Length: 181
Image 1 (tube, rainbow, N blue to C red):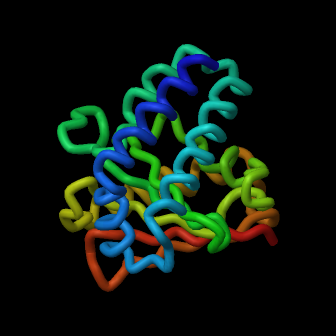
Image 2 (image 1 turned 90 degrees about the vertical axis):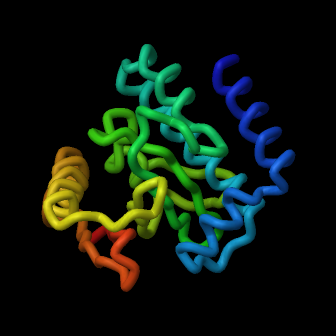
């Protein structure tokens, strides 16, 4: 996975040069109890999990596209519309940049994946926001909820998993909470 190592080196360098300023703003915007370096480490971990899941699903040819969309500073990324910010059970947070159809992020696979660095499986919840923090529109919310539900229910039965959606006081963010039954 030379490509993954190159991505990680570039991502960490960009964060270091910026003193994690992009993550600092992201954390502040979501009011998360986290430090920027925790988000950096969590993001690296979840990107690695996403790449592993793409490979396990025989979608190796999508790895390059996925990694090229995971820039530390998302400004100017044309193929990305959303940031998914994952809560790894309070041990870390991770920001994954996602295209409008979320083709390369399998939420069900991520929910079941072990993150050995934090000794957790999956995530507790995640937030969906636009990169520019503009408000999510009503029809867009419906599409996002349907997309998340179909992704999770593709791998899990309704009696195996609970999930619900909460629009935050800030209309630019949708919170998705997910739990095993």
